[in-house]
Length: 270
Ligand SMILES: Nc1ncnc2c1ncn2[C@@H]1O[C@H](COP(=O)(O)OP(=O)(O)OP(=O)(O)O)[C@@H](O)[C@H]1O
Image (cartoon, rainbow, N blue to C red; front, side, top):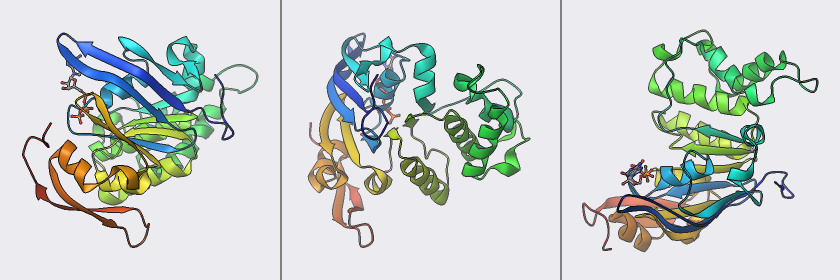
């Protein structure tokens, strides 16, 4: 696996297809997440976003095509190398174990644990730092089962950061989070300078934080490029069935999406 000038590996999906029974879930998807940048995958419910992320995470294997990380097929990377490189925030994470927040975050350091180069004692330090970054010190001794949805999301993000990854794969990372917490998490993910690949539902957040967007619709790539290139009223109508205007954001200069309603309840004309 090779990095780039940023030291972070980029992600490339080459003609990835995946089907279950008669259903084509991903159809010849060619897309990229540039090294050291924040890439958003957007698209309606069921368009294939989580499935695409699961190919990057090696939870599922494409029927055809390849997913490359820094130019190497993800399936060729050793387990430890992969775990040291890529951290994930899942859409529905759960644990049945009675672990404290501190212990869960420490689990993130496992891929780096042991050996002379990095004694185990560092785990507590890494976890402490990640907990501080997410502002969840007050939850340190709580168990997973007692946490709210948003608190769990922050704990999982802290665990991912404790892993010290080069690549972050985030499946609906703002799920359960209040507006400010959602903004904080995306800002944090962007400011880390890692390669970030995130499935997002909130189009305005995608417009604000993503350097690059990939639009999926029924398992196919409908558009990719910068938020300004991709988020046009025509695309929003066609892919989401949205009646929306796209203005210039007075502060960021990027797209400001003004929702006016839906043009159809089932999406645009296909
Ligand atoms: N193992 C499976 N067997 C059959 N169908 C599946 C399987 N996994 C996913 N699907 C279907 O594939 C489609 C894409 O699912 P996926 O979860 O990737 O979509 P998504 O874009 O992440 O959706 P959402 O926004 O609702 O989370 C859905 O219609 C889903 O029902």
